[in-house]
Structure formats: C-alpha cells, structure tokens
Amino acid sequence: MSDIELPSGTRAHMALPDTTGQVSDAVRGLVLIPDIMGLRPLFEDMADRLAREEGWCVVCPEPFPGREAMDLDDRLAAMGTLDDTRQLGDVVQAAAMTRCEKVGVVGFCMGGMYALKASGTGRFDKVVSFYGMIHVPEEWRGSGHGDPLREVKRHRARVLAIIGERDHFTPPDDVAELETAGATVVRYPDAEHGFVHDPARPTHRPDDAADAWRRAIEFLRDA
Image 1 (cartoon, rainbow, N blue to C red):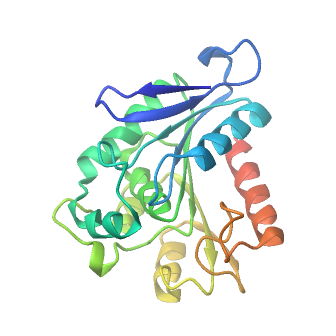
Image 2 (cartoon, rainbow, N blue to C red):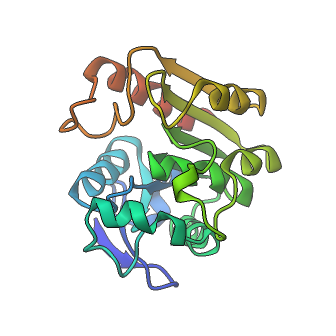
C-alpha cells in the first residue's frame, strides 16, 4: 500500500492484493473516487480492504490536487471551478495505473457523481455510484462540468446506483431518469445522503450499509 503520483501530478493511494504485492497479481482494477473531503485515511483504509479481500488493484486519487487543505465550506464553494477534463483525466490515469484490462470505478457522494461521469469515458466496464448526483447541483455548476446522466447515456457501461430515498441530492425524478437510462438502481427507503461509507456520520445505517456493500461487491465481481 503506497502513495503514488499520477502523470498529471495528482496524489493518489494505491492498494495491491495480498499476494506478492505486484500490480500483475490483481484480478481486477478499481478506481475509488472519494467524497468531497478527498483522499484521507477513511478511503485509504477502504482501498486497502478491497485490495486485500477481493484481490483487486485499487487506486484512489485526490479530487482537489494542490488544494487539500481546504475546509468543507471552501470545497463546496470550489465545486464550480472543477473541470471534467482534469477530474476525469485523473480517473482514467488512475485506471491505467492498475495495469488491468477490466477496471471498475466506485465513487461516493461527489465521487459518485464523477463515477457516473466516468461511465462516458469508455474505460470502465462497471460503475458503482453511491448516492452520486445524477445532475450537477445548481450551486455547483460551472463551464467545466458535464452532465452525469448524459455520460451514462453516451456509453453503455454497466451502472449500479445506490440511492437513499431521503437524500435531497438525488430527487426521485432524477433517479427515475437514471433508471430509464439503463442503470440498475437500488433504493433504501429510510436512508439519507452518505449512509454507507463513513460510520462516523450521523446518517450512517449499518444494516443498509452492509447490504449496499454486498450488492456493490457482487456487481463488480460479476463478469
């Protein structure tokens, strides 16, 4: 498990299978896109666990390269300045670092939005979006943002969307559009935003989180 640098200069964490510790040992590549707070021990540990338990090579890039010190308010304010060319370029570069033919992408919250966008690159065979925004929120829009749903429609990667029905970031009409576009949608009726990936969140729901993880892992394993 190590910190690496993508060709763009973006910092990332790479986790290798527990065999001989070589990239070539991996049975699948996986790009893990963090939430808005970026690359941190929560996601490093998640990448390490997925590599250890599943035999995957996992690469997790920092979504705010060079601006890691920003607090949440600053990150929210900076969302409109992000550019898909750089963000998705880093995601595709992270996929290349796995040296695997088959590479999936998993993202959470903001990272889930970028996982949906990444489906349009054609690089990923499987996409898992945990409560990712299906359309860019109004307050985040900027000239560098493309529409996540448009990218899902553009390339027919297999998409699994994990959705909390009490999540205001993924309103029912947007979820219905995503489903119509061909995504597999799993809804959790009592869940709010961010209910899976961080046990420290007040919205965390252990039973729903365990079920969502099981579904995501099975989806990624399925050839």
